[in-house]
Length: 389
Ligand SMILES: Nc1ncnc2c1ncn2[C@@H]1O[C@H](COP(=O)(O)OP(=O)(O)OP(=O)(O)O)[C@@H](O)[C@H]1O
Image (cartoon, rainbow, N blue to C red):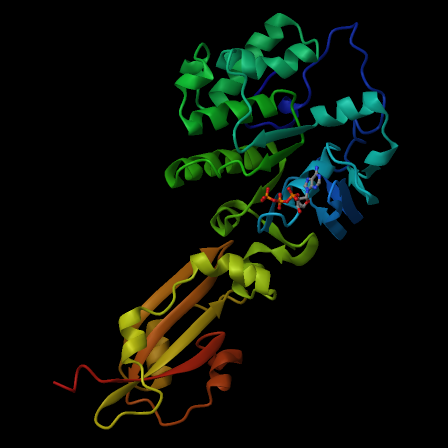
């Protein structure tokens, strides 16, 4: 058994001693050449029965998560994110619909098969869930001990996992001596111990500072790319989704508000819930500019203020030289917030244009070969600072 971070096969479940019965279900050994780490939810609903009455946490959730992809689930507190995530490893049983992992309906599994399923689905948590009385080594070794893996193999594997997460020198440390980021690395190593095909991340970076968040996201990205593990993460931060996910589900009151490629959902959010979640990432107009803006052209030299939006998708770039040539006047940048997500440019430019023609067919400048932006909006006018002194 070898744990190399360049070979997918090397992270398959560790070999077990003779006396440990191997589960015989198809789920434990997916068909050769079949999907590994594919998840599908079909019409999933979840209703909790509480003292205060029934709580409908999930309704009519339909989605597929491609093997080897990174899938983000975002929503406000109480939207149903944890409930959804926990249906995937059957910690939560759906009230309606079905959950399939590699085309196997989880409702058909018996207890032994469920144990086998959970070995194939690792999980990490916001508060790490490490055992305080055990060393880093023992925390990571635990799932292997439970699975009856021989001691020599455990030692080898734990050291390989420690190297993978960059904690070679912490094997004998106790969790209380570790930083938050180091604790999460231990959590990741423990989750990978059984060679899972899917990793569930429950607000895995929410307790971390921004810099540590970046390093953990980088580690997750490396694990995904090098080991081919499907990663499903829930978060309430759009910045985490932007950083790492391929596709995103926006949940709102237990329902699918939006589902799609990250760059599309970010570029053109369709649902109010998505726009609200995106708001912290977007720059409003600076207060000084808002105060200077006038709805009508002022007397004297002035500039027209335009907002140009970019939604990605067709390679259109915020090319200032071209924009100035098309608008036919001097162009000043008042504000710029442009991002690159999955290779697509999106964001906005706020420009002050002097000598622009009195009226313009803005729509024509958002279409076809003439396009300078995906959307153009006139915000108003400002006095021309170059000519007003
Ligand atoms: N065991 C339970 N019993 C009763 N109601 C529950 C239970 N677990 C969750 N709920 C309710 O289900 C709804 C969805 O909860 P869930 O934890 O899935 O949302 P969430 O989006 O993960 O929220 P948060 O971001 O706050 O963790 C909430 O109204 C919650 O109060």
